[in-house]
Amino acid sequence: MNIKEKLRNLRHSGLSFCVFRYPEEQNVQLVVQSGSTLTHAENGIVLHPFSTEERPIHYLGNAFIGNLDDWNRVSDHRVSEKENPRPSDRKIFSRDEYTDRCTKAIDRIKTTALDKVVLNVIKEFRTDEAPEELFIRALKAYQDAFVHWTFIQGELSWLGASPELLLKRESNRFETMSLAGTRVQGSDPMTFKEEEEQAIVTSFITNTLDELGVKEQVISKVREKRTGHLVHLCNHIHFESQLETEQILTALHPTPAVCGLPRDIAFDTLKDLDMMGRDYYCGYIGFRKADHAEYYVNLRCMDLTDGRAFVFVGGGVTADSIHQEEWEEMNQKSLTMGRILE
Image (cartoon, rainbow, N blue to C red):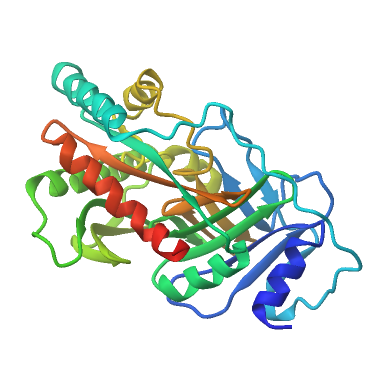
């Protein structure tokens, strides 16, 4: 079977699974869960929502872990896909609705202790493409991203191509990334607004690691990172620690790049502005085993259900933000995944 046939076979197998490929690599890896109950797994995939108040954490990995090439099981039967349940309050904001919330967020930043908040919108697309077709297209389009398709029978079909590493571990050596600020490739250079966004995220990460007792941190110079047709500012941060991976993840998630700063105030602001409902967008997804773990922020992603693709995008708002420019940034970000739906 070729890759498309294997993925179609998996989708109809009654199993839950995740296929993924690391940035700049070629091998597509597969993790399969058997049975309807997903439990905590030492080895396998972790799919973590933005907020556990809204959606559960999913673990996959008790049936198969390996390269997709090594999966040769053929289904003895075909099961119908169930429509993936969606929150009843999922909101598709219009430009005017987004502008209203952006204006309120800017006013709050200017009058309270809030420094930054990340607003988000959902763009709805119609598609006749099978999810395996879209996954293959994303593999080709985004070689520099962590590309994944997570399919949980009767619950979700989630596709993403994330450029942002949240945490990587090799033994006691760790790496994380500060990624913020967005411009269209070939447009005007980064401004103070984008530089400030980047500095806020970097300071949060380094201060958080300090509080965890990590004193030796190697921080790269700021550079531009291209992902699709967009460009971001980026730092890589390396450190060593004897802490458990989950402890560091809990401290870092969500970063100001996807929530805001101060984090608690930004989180409450999102609730006040009715800007939650993110599901697994801005959560994280990663693969772990005994000697290695690698987690990515679940950005540039979409929920596929019933012939529709709900594309999630977000952007940081600061005191210097202009709501028209923020809306245009949202539209540009939606094209990153929207282009594979064409």
